[in-house]
View 1 (cartoon, rainbow over the protein chains, first blue to last red):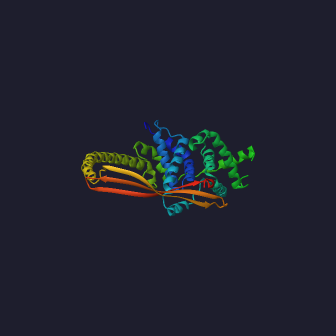
View 2 (spheres, chains in turn cyan, blue):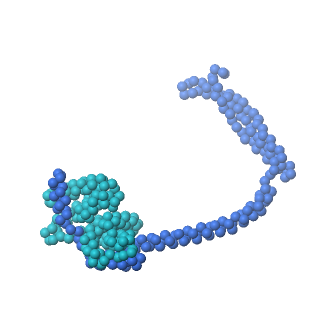
View 3 (spheres, rainbow over the protein chains, first blue to last red):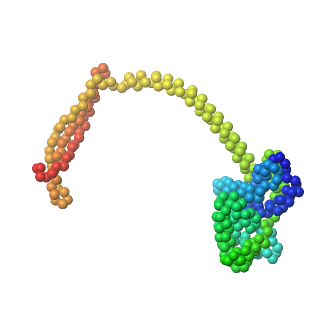
Length: 167
Length: 168
């Protein structure tokens, strides 16, 4: 790395994007501590690949989170079930909400948890990650058209799961 | 769900903002570029040791590469050291084993017909069938005069051939 990003730029970049990364990581990991570690490791790894010192592309960080989450899940499969159950039982709010919106955000969080992972990933990356379908394709390793169709199916499924509350 | 519903629902979802990470994670992320410069992940002592997994994997791989090289070298040395020993042992052992093996000067192979008879049976449908039976004695005789050894082996063998009833 030839040059480090200016601290102010870096702070601004993190303020804008770290919540997206953590939201995505929370959906990939089995517990909050794992999710935070995934974000930290992915940001560090993505920074290391940026030779010009600029903040890394969002798609690269999301892709790194996903890859590391898969590695972590493989390792954790070997861990004792008791330990995992304890970790899974920690509730964390995915969204910043006002009191009025709390019920609605919880409803969406619950519905997202029930969505098949292939839809949840694409929805999160598109709606809250702000990625294009081309970038989502890079992150998830599927063609852009597939990502787009998964997004549409995902929206329909999420709508069904949340009922007519959001209509 | 039509296109308008689709967009409205999407807009509803976008209103929700992802939760801001906890302060300690933000602090660790702020240090990330410094950690990169130092050649190790920032906040490796962070929430858990999982953060340095890629470091431990690379160390493990390095250790495995070293161990594999050392094992290969030791195996090669053992193979080189064992090879002449095995040859020498084989050379010594060969005459001993050869001494116990009889050397046949004469081998006779013979067969004798010791019995011949026909028998008649009936198939389930009542049709008669005839069998021509021959009893043979196969014989092998091996002689080693130097050791005063004679080995003789006789094996009985029954040969059954079905023949048509009309040939009776």
